[in-house]
Image (cartoon, rainbow, N blue to C red; front, side):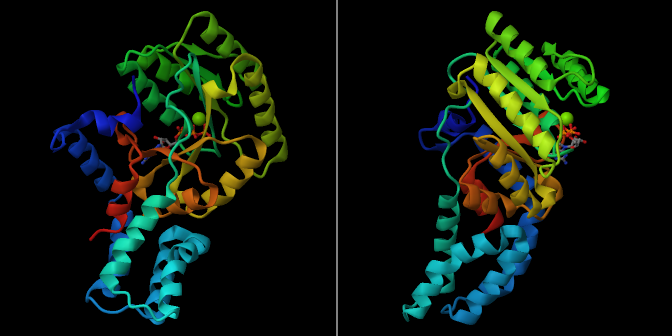
Length: 324
Ligand SMILES: Nc1nc2c(ncn2[C@@H]2O[C@H](COP(=O)(O)OP(=O)(O)OP(=O)(O)O)[C@@H](O)[C@H]2O)c(=O)[nH]1
Ligand SMILES: [Mg+2]
C-alpha cells in the first residue's frame, strides 16, 4: 500500500539507505534550493567563524530567520532557549547553537495521528484551499501514485463553480484512467460529494479524492458551504476514514498562516500539503505553519509533474534549509 511515512523504512537497506531513497532525498533538497540559498547567504556571515554566542548575535539571527519567512512568532519560539542560556551566563558556541537549532526545528514538525491513506475503505481525502494553490493538480499527482500502487481510485469534482474546473478534473480522469463523479456547472457541491461517496461505497473503491473550488478564506458564505460539504460526508463515511487536507501555496509566504487560521475555523483540518516550494525562497513557511497549528505536512510540491510531489521529510527539510 502507498504510505509515504513507511516508505523510508521499507526502502532502507540493512546498512543504510537505498539508491531510491537517496534519489528522493536529493530531489527533495534540490527542490528547496531557493529557500536554501536565501537562508545560507543570510546566515553565512553569522556562522563563518566559530565563536561564543552573545545577545547581538542572537538578534541578528532573529532578524534573518524572520526575513526567511519563519515569521516572528516561530523565530522567537525557536531562539528563546538560547536567549535564556545566554542571559544565565552559560557558554554557547555558534556550532552548538546551530546543531541544537536544527534539532528544535525537526521537533517542531508533528507526526501524523492517522494512517495515510486511511486503512478502512473507502478512504476519503478532501482537498481545500484558496484559489490556484494547486488542489486539482495535487489530486491528479496523488491519483497516479495510488493507481501505481494498485489502489482503486475515484475522483469527485466538488468544484462545480466553473465548467473549466469540472473539465480539468475529467481530463485528468481520462489521462489517468480513473473514473470521475461530476454534475453540471453550478450544482450544489455537496450533492456531487454525496453521489461520489455513495458510488465509492457501493462499488468498493479504495480511495476517493474530493476536489473543491478554490475559496477566499475571508468569504463567509464560501466557508459555510465547506461546512455543509463536511456534514454531508459525515452522513456517509465515518470521520476516521477521512482526511481533510489544506493545500497551501508556499509562494504566498506568511499569508498561508492566515489562510490556515480561517479554514481551521470552518472545519477540522488534519494535514497540510505545501505546493510550489520549487519556485520560492519562502520555504521557511513550512516551519511557521507546523509551529503555529501543529499540523503534519504530508507532501510538498516541487514542480508541476507527478513525480514532483514528494512525501515531506522533516530531517531532509531541516538539513536542506539549515545546511552544515
Ligand atoms: N511550480 C509548481 N507549480 C505547481 C505546483 N503545484 C501546482 N502547480 C501549478 O499551479 C497552477 C494551479 O494549479 P491547480 O491545481 O489548478 O490549482 P487549484 O488549487 O485547483 O486552483 P482552483 O481550482 O482555481 O482553486 C497550475 O498551473 C499547476 O501546474 C508545484 O508544486 N510547483
Ligand atoms: Mg482546482
